[in-house]
Length: 241
Image 1 (cartoon, one colour):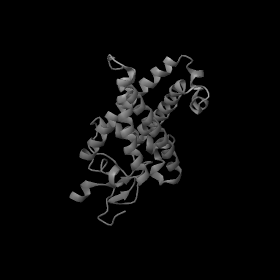
Image 2 (tube, rainbow, N blue to C red):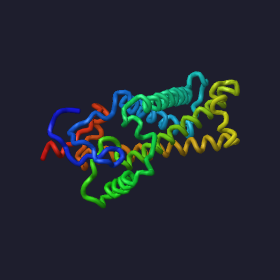
Image 3 (cartoon, one colour):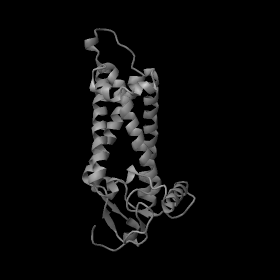
């Protein structure tokens, strides 16, 4: 935490009044690294996944001279491994990192202040209230959204490796760990469909996530985008008052 003019009225992740502050170190380096690597992996996965579901027109000639879809599949699989390893690393850091590193893995539904915070932030995003609340970590609505985003990422990793195991074979570790998915959906095309729908769910989330981050940086006068670079949350309006 830096030494500067104190900022009153800041809430912690559970809606409790936090100590006065101006900036606070929230996102540790491993969390920031995971965020940006994960973002890049998702861009590659969504782009290549779209072309895997809707392949490019075939071209004449020998297959060895037209390996574009092979490169697309390779990029998809490689990015999938990066996403999976990053997810495991993020879960590990939830245990060894600071309180904000584990925030998105639990929902304090029993806390009425947190529930009130979700409803208040929803009204704030709908332009129904004039002033935002100030939170050191994720605000309750972002907390709620990120929790389900992590569940969606897990679903995509599980179904993705299950589909990969079809090519790797029943003796592969992918099938041994994820083959049980076909007990739920015996028709692998159903798994393809759910995996594809999950991709569009992530695309919609990313659009809303970027919009919310830019909007909050401008309207709530507290840093979000730069926080994922420096790790520090900054409350600008108190600088300017």
